Amino acid sequence: MTDDARFEDGRESPLNLGALDVEDLKVLSSLAQDAVFPITEMQWDSKARRFGLLLNRFRWEDAGKARHAPERVQSVLAFDHVLRVASQGIDRSDTDMILSLLSVEFEPGADGAGDILLTLAGDGAIRLSVETIEATLKDVTRPYIAPSKSVPKHDD
Image (cartoon, rainbow, N blue to C red; front, side, top):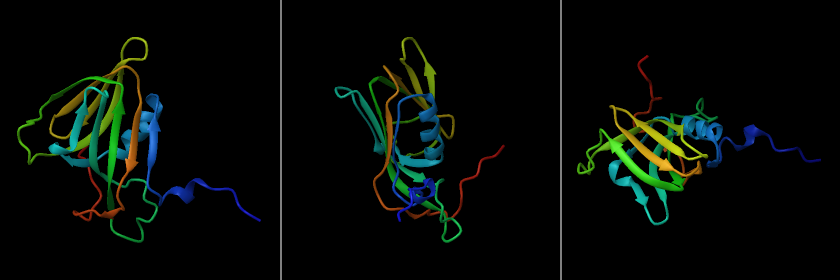
């Protein structure tokens, strides 16, 4: 006799998730919180209307935390239907800059369009003007021990 798959069975698998509405985007935001990435690992393809980041994301969903040190994994966070990209608090000429993603939020406009706001540590932000919400978060490497060997913490 076979058992049905359980949610817990997928916790050690690579993520490959999509977001098509605000609630989906909140899930991606929670999983990408505290991801770090070099400024050189973000790209906007204006012709394809696609913006992407190669992140080193903390594995908040890791069910094996009791067995090993905290882990990170490289992931691609991509957004489709992007019309414009703007940033503040980021020196794009500093190619050694490492950015830390705090949240991903949607600010609605007319007819499903709006802005996706990527809030960064240190008062930085990236604003994506989009026709509609369509985002993906996909793990592209195996997990690795977080260099800090600790869980990210935030001052309240």
